Amino acid sequence: MKVSPATTQRVAVGFMWTLAAITFAVLIFILAFILAHGLPHVTWSFLTESPSSMGREGGIFPMILGTLLVAGLAVLVAAPIGVATAVYLTEYTREGRLTAVIRFGADCLAGVPSIIFGLFGFVFFAITLGMGLSVLSGSLTLALMVLPTIIRTSEEAIRAVPYAYREVSFGLGSTRWQMVITVVLRSALPGISTGIVLSLGRSISETAAVMLTAGSALRLPRSLFDSSRTLALHFYILSREGISMPNAYATASVLIIAILALNLLAYWLMRRFVAKVGR
Amino acid sequence: MKRDRLIGAILLVVALSAISGLALITVFIFREGVPIILRVGAGQFFLSTDWEPSLGHFGILSMIGGSLAVTVGAAVIGVVFSLGLAIVLTQFAPPALAAALKPAIELLAGIPSVVYGFVGVVTLVPLIRHSLGGPGLSVLAASIVLGIMILPTITSIAIDALQAVPRSYVEGSIALGATRWQTVTMVLLRAARSGIVAAVILGMGRAIGETMAVIMVAGNALALPHSLLDPVRTLTSNIALEMGYASGDHRQALFATGVTLFVIITLLNTAALAVSRRRAGRRRVG
Image (tube, rainbow over all chains, first blue to last red; front, side, top):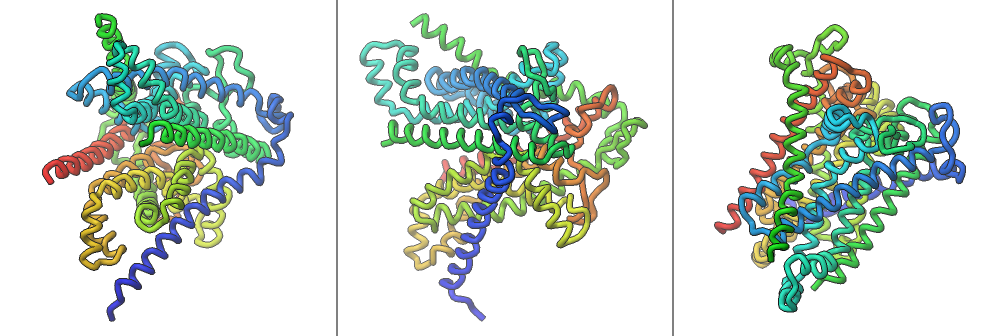
């Protein structure tokens, strides 16, 4: 028996639409599930108080601060390095063996699993450099982890800036560096920012690497050398050790909302970038 | 002009950060991990399932088996869904709908792995336990959770690969009277094959490297799995579960677990790179 090509197509396309529908249903289910269970417990006092009895009671203020410190510092370190790398690759050199080596490094780094970053950060930053389990060790480890993302997105953004802009700038007598600062980086800024915002999201979500480098202290970090537990790790410990399910859901809700906000911001920046440089 | 050259030199030094970071990671992980492999004996370390750190028994075969099992499972699920999504979004969906769905896939990539693990443990694991039996924490649960997690990676690379196929191939096929679906299977997928293979390999690399979600849903049992419903421990979980209290030989053995993982990932990434380079080479000729 022979099935007509039109029927085959109808069945195949129907099957693929079903797969797509399942995927988006899963996405919505995960978000709705966490928020429905967690949002009722997210109160002002939950956000502003310190936890007591291992997180069974009280709030998550030290974890919010710890997350902002670790993730913020990571991006603060990685962004200038990543953008400078992208500027070097696009504006200051020709494609050759050296750019191939730099790109190979970034590609390989992007493939390294977060637990390996954690092991490395633990033995290098915490032990060899004597930083201990601290905000600083955690953020430097994360900085290395998000560096490839920032390099790649910045490079793409810079390459999208029309070549004519550069020629005009040179024509007006600017040096290469002036051209990079006033023309290239300014035009590419929304695109570069997209990569930075996504890296911030990744730093906030990361758990394995932070667990081995920033530690899991519950108190408020007083300096960069203090250990601090991030939101993602706090959520993991609360749920895994069954300390408090309501507080686990609430912590996860805060995480999810932060991720949603960052993704929206990245999306908005990207649209602005496309509108600006788009042909 | 002189100032420009100086700036160029500074930028070059900064640009070498990524490769230097990679070199540092490699050196430190290997320096911590390789000695214990030599002391225990490579055969013993890689081929024994006996992991009893308090007795000085370090064999990671069950973790290697666990990692491979969940990675293959995740790849099967990830590939079916990702290819379906990539084909639908590039070939059959109205452009406006496709543009609206792509950010949703990116959002899927942004959800923290602990959240995936948690939702898996409270919904999927009981479902498997009640409907299929076994402890629920299993290869199957880990494969499904990981399959969803690697879906954005595979989908976005597969979309790029499909869009890189010259329009004339598709138009030629349609002009010869093929249906859209016949064009997909006979022309598009074949032309984009190496890109899709690279996507799948990179997805597998992400699956084998994933830690937190797997710890939560895989059950972490120290034995080679015999069925999809058996609990397993992966290389990554072994490190994350025991680093907190390990010291001495035990800690070194965990670094050696990391070395093993690192080597597997490097092999996968090299394979992906080789596949996509072959594609680039072929395109230059053709």
